[in-house]
Length: 105
Image (cartoon, rainbow, N blue to C red; front, side):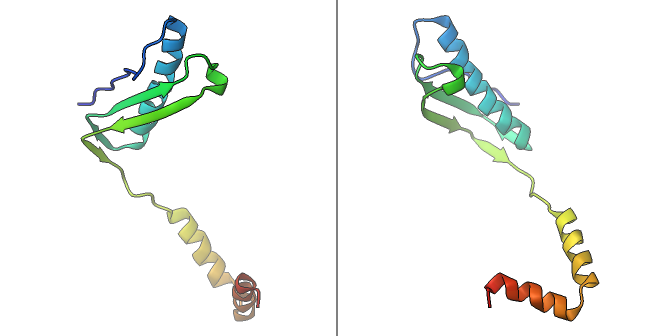
């Protein structure tokens, strides 16, 4: 079970400033939730300047608290296959020329 606390560290006088700050908090929480396979106790707190527009928001601090976050390993299988296919199709001279270009010899 994951709860997202959208509270902020400062209070504002105008409700629209609070809404924009909560938007940033929800956005960051949503990104973490989308990327994490498992998230427990996730709480994101954003301290932002209420006098700046959302398009050019000044953020003083972002604090992310959690008790557990789990991510899957990123797999790059498509690139491995492409490099293996390229390597098998190249002649020895082409491989040497490519390797030589990496070291500027």
